[in-house]
Image (cartoon, rainbow, N blue to C red; front, side):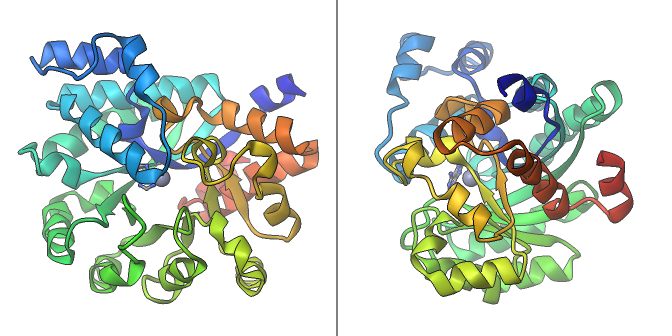
Length: 324
Ligand code: ADE
Ligand code: ZN
């Protein structure tokens, strides 16, 4: 079964590129850019990756991103992730990046996009991995800051397929960004949002009704509202679930307690993803293996996860068919 999971073609729809920064590369980039780190060693960094909730993770995650300075840094970060995709038989990936994390530090938007998209193009040519790029607004920042970021994205819209919404969910509900999502849609961008990761089912409803998203990132908190679960299944709203992330951030006390199989059996379009693999202990195959081990998914159910991700991805119909 392990061999079956390793070889299973996978499609990743929820991956923060900054969350794929392994401590080894963080140290390399810190040295290259003359930046001091709060850790004495790679091991010390790894040991610090113990989280009690989303915010305790975000504080460490944003700090790690400080080592990313140049186009080459963003290229190296993205290329390292894509090599892991190749190992895990990820055939298509839709990558989030957080422009505000970088522009706030004075790194130009163009530098970030150029480094990431050069690596994505190289992976398409050399590894046969297709990809799309999603720009996330940081929800703990203001609506105006999101509008400013959308403005900066305008020269790069040929490289960006969608907007997303991430960072601290509690206290920053989706409706805070209704207007900037509407403006994004008018520019031809598609919409996704993190909702129901730590926050209530109401955030999932708001992401759908106010932001008009085509996918919910996480969404696992829907389960406390049975009517919502039925609605998600009926409207075929994909959830990009991140099992190892949910355990590391204490959304569930153990993988055995995870509701992934419940949602799958309810007919919700659930997918398996890695979120921030360098911080949560695993890439795509690790997430599939962890879910299978704890919840005993059958082979048809594991295949269904990939089929759901193909259905939910933002490729056009012709390119989706090419994945099959
Ligand atoms: N940014 C990176 N990972 C995140 C997560 N799991 N939730 C919200 N924002 C994030
Ligand atoms: Zn996420």
